[in-house]
Image (tube, rainbow, N blue to C red; front, top):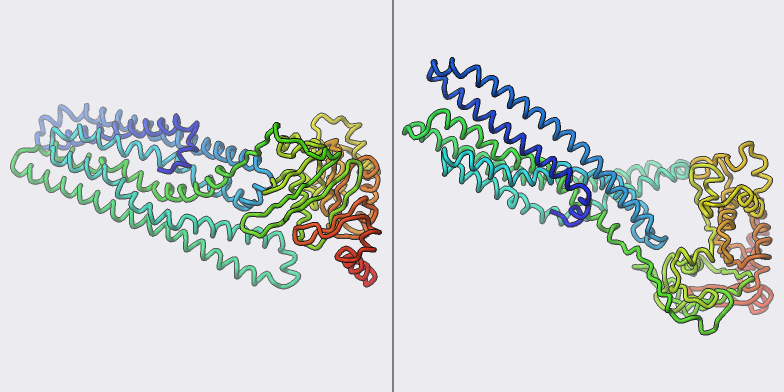
Amino acid sequence: MNKTLLRLTRGLWFWILAIAGVSFLTLVGTTALAEIIAGFLGSLFEPQEVLSSAGSAIRAALLVALFTFCAQMVKGLLEYKTAAKARTSMRRMIFSKVLDLDAGGIEKIGPVSAITASVDAVEQMQMYFSTYLPSLICSILAPIYLFFHLKNISMPVALLLLVVSLILLPVNNLFRCRIEEIRKGYWKSLDDMTGYYMDSLRGLTTLKLFDRDKEHSRVLGEKADVLNYNINCFMKVNFTSFLVTEAMIYAAVLFALVNSAGRIADGSMTIAQALIVLMLSYSYFSAAKELMNASHSALTAIAAAGKVEEILDTDTSRPYDPSLPKDPEQFAGIRMDHVSYGYEGRSRALQDMSLTVPKGKTVALVGLSGCGKSTTASLLMRFCDPLSGNIYIEGNDYCSMKPEELRKHIAMVPQQVNLFSGTIRENLMLADPDADDALLLEALEEAGLGSFIHSQSKGLDSDVGNAGSSLSGGQRQKMGIARALLSRAEYMIFDEATSSVDPQSEKEIWTTIGHLAETRTLIIISHRMSSVQNADCIYVLKDGMVAQHGTHETLMNEGGLYKELVVRQQAMEVAE
């Protein structure tokens, strides 16, 4: 039994108990058929009795066989329905949890883990509900039912078979310890191989260009070998468990055979009774054998549940407290006050950071890669919360507002704008589901896509392709700007919004940003120093701290890191 899997059975117990009930009816039919056949075979030594009972025995056997067949068909249908319902329920639960995660939570669990949990893990766990749990229930009920059928014929045999059948499961569970040891390694190797495979597919063109595809193929083979080794570990444990329990079953059946033969010899048991004992002895363990056949799936499901549990137990709550103190300075804009932040397992990304973004102004963040620019943007969007210090927006503490309420005031255009398959209209209405065509066209015009949208025969209903593949890089970024505009946020963050577009598109986007600076408060993160020279204030970050701040002219006169970055970029542009 596994607490995570039991937690996921919500809404499935009716189906699980239905499968167990139909399986029990199948056992009842099988038992009745065995008694009919045993009685008929035992009467073969009395020809007169055979002639009188043959017809009724055949009719009874056919009816019982038909009943058992129908029960098996219903059981198969219930198992299919249960598996389908389990897959749907679990994927909905995992997907809902992933959607509840903010950007920081997604980074923590990793997109590959989310994929393997919702695809591979669910496929492996659904057998636990459709097969293992019903078999577990039957493996307890069946021996008790059969005990009462055999105890009046042979109490020693009935008692021994009952004891053996009930201890099979505890014996099987002894092998669980080994499974617990290897499950983490199994899922780690699966994540590792899946992630490497996905990276190889995404970068296949690059690998071909540099003739590194064979090397990646070799590494992928090694990772597959590690995964194969871990799978074989599961198989070995399952085989050993199967070997031990099968030995116990056949030893018990052998005892029943020897005991029945001895009692027939001394005349204390009829042949018909002996046949019933032998036929039902193996039936004692039919549910247990079915359980053992499902045990590998159960062990794999338990291993898979560990990965799902990691996702489901991720804290998605974003606490807020409206009673938190106001900004003592009552600053009209955004203020970061001695903020520090660090990612798990890494050094501090920000250390005692303080900066201000006056309302109606343009503020730029620059610095070398890894200096904390994007982390600052994540904190400002409240994708994560500071470890220490405070962030205020127009006098209110960030943590006094719900994230969704805060994001009505501040929007971000990231380095890579994500578009979804569908139309331009559908992608824009993510920001405002109630926006009419006039608002959508106005946002596109303001984002610099006015001429583009008017050139499309279907206008707003033009398809953007798979993840925006029918648009250029610059058009995708402008779509991100238009979507941010539709949110009507007073503050907008541009996080390297032009780093992946061509020079012409970059020029157009900066022109658009320049126009937006007239009506909105902008926070610009850029590696191109020439694009931030007109900012009202430039913050130069170094090692997670503010190294310099001021206007372009002030910082150039001051020298230091800012001037060094500007001179270095000018030299690169001349060289180009």
